[in-house]
Figure (cartoon, rainbow, N blue to C red):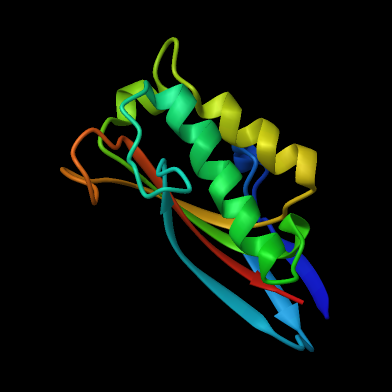
Length: 133
C-alpha cells in the first residue's frame, strides 16, 4: 500500500489533518463504527469532554489494533460532537485529538460535525475511522 497526502494549502497542519489522502494498492480496508466513551461493559461515560475524548480515542485504537491494523493505517476520521465550543473553544480539548494523531503518525482526511445527540445521554464526542493496509 502507498499513501499520499494532498494539501494544496498548509493551514490544516495545525489541526493535524490532511485535505485528502490517496491510497494506492491497498490489500485491505477497515471501516470502524463510531466509537464513543463507552467502557468494556457497555456503560456510557458521564465525564467531561476531555476525559471522554481520551476514552474515545483509546476505543478507536483498540478496535483498529484488534483488527490487526496500526493507528498509522488510519486514512479518514470523522468526529461528531454535541458541543463544538467545548471541543475547539478556549479551554477546549482538541489538543487531545491532535496529540493522538501526531503520536501515531496518522495522516488522515478528517471531518468534524456538530450533532444534537449521540447514542446515549451524556455522551459528548464520537469518532469514526477508516484504515487501510
